[in-house]
Amino acid sequence: MSDRFIRVYKKLYLDEVKTHLLTYGALSGTCANCKTMDLKLDTLQCPECKTEFKYIAFQNVRDHMPKMLKISHERPHIVFVDYDDFKRIEGEEKAKGILG
Image: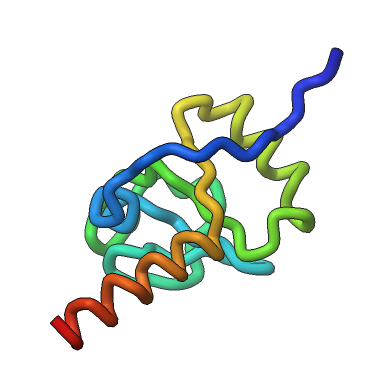
């Protein structure tokens, strides 16, 4: 039997996720809290705002699956967040703020 990633849906507070989220693109990461760029994937906390990274969202999960496997082994407390879900919900919240 082999370990696999399966998507699981869980209710989370956007502010909590955003405050502790590292978003990772093709080559580097960005702190979702303060927008500091060029962060390495193994960064435990943002060098600028000092937030601890509890969540990671990959812009392209398929390209980073080997990295996800390694991270889940080395840092089992990390929660992987779907990047598209995060961006969609973040956009909805911004729209509510503007319209509300």
